Image (tube, rainbow, N blue to C red; front, side, top):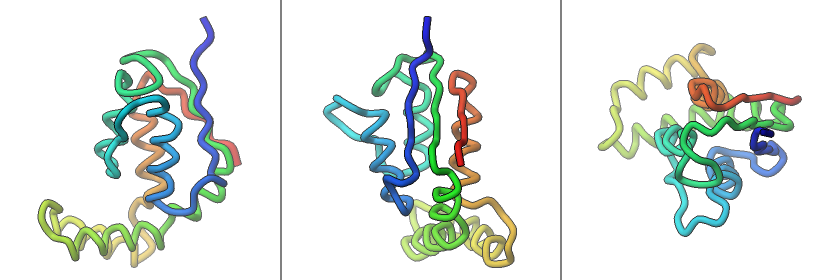
Length: 132
């Protein structure tokens, strides 16, 4: 049986909000609701059963134009995301995001792109292929 294949195109978004919109379009196609705009929500839908594939179903995710996505979801977008969480405060752990912001500003720490690809790879039913 052929694995389901989902293609994320980095040309279809340029920031984290656009990424979430693209994921909703691809993974929640035909559903009456969308996933929330958070990394926790992304993690949840990757288990399956909420959208275009069943829980545990093996899926190949091909992320095209990852060099663009790596830049778009890089240090600057990560910094903006952390600053928003610090400014908003509750329910975010402000101290944690202040530490993460300092890491990013010092050229260390994971970018949003790094975090997102790690979330995909944590799901054993997903075969993630990154295409430049």
